[in-house]
Length: 48
Image (tube, rainbow, N blue to C red; front, side):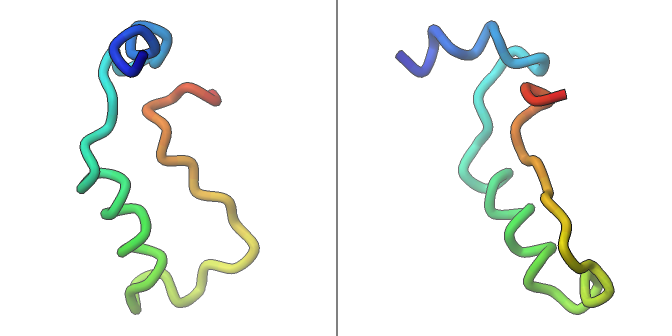
């Protein structure tokens, strides 16, 4: 089922778990301290 969905993602592959984690870690780190009320899409461009 996962492989069947990959062609629909603009990057043509599924995310690795660490790629999702990097988005989460960014929001948890000091560098994102000025980010408020934002939605960060980590979806390989699917919702573009």
